Length: 228
Image 1 (cartoon, rainbow, N blue to C red):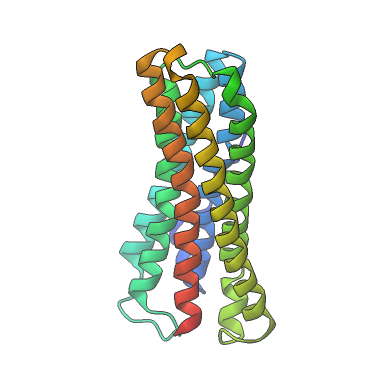
Image 2: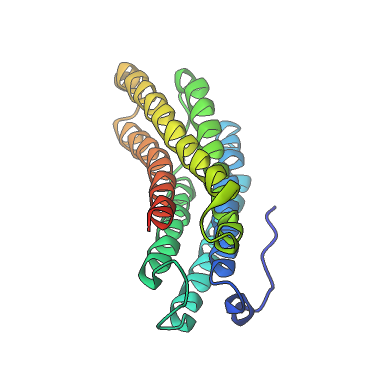
């Protein structure tokens, strides 16, 4: 079970403006980390655990919203940094969208009983693994922002982060391929399934694909920092 932060939100805004963004990303990543066990509960038709994991995601998403709101309300109007204030606000908004998408996935399973088609399980596992990999890579990238700032967005950390950005983009392309195969498989068996369930499975695939797109958006945002 992810540990909820009890750190005072006001303390997040002291020092580097990247600290609250990194704290926010940790909570966002915790949301994503609950998706694989949520699916495992769905596989096992364990309604109690499905509800528990979905509710945990909801709580973490709420915590992420609080950090985001505090950051927006307390951020100075001007910062003597090689990063624009509006870019920092956009970055935390991009991160928050990942938590929102995770919550949307959880809500589907919270409010609707879903059975995983056997033919789809292996592909779903592959997709979930890819989702975790790209989310972890995005989090690691955000964790390097302090070092980048200290070095003036240059040097070894610069090279390290640019490689991370390239890695996130490769992962997003790989996930696109997995999602395509998932949709193709679902299309081939949809006549054997309940039509409403088919609709929701397409929606779930869309949301999982969206997480990787949002992770790539983060990479593009960090690349914007590096290019200025």
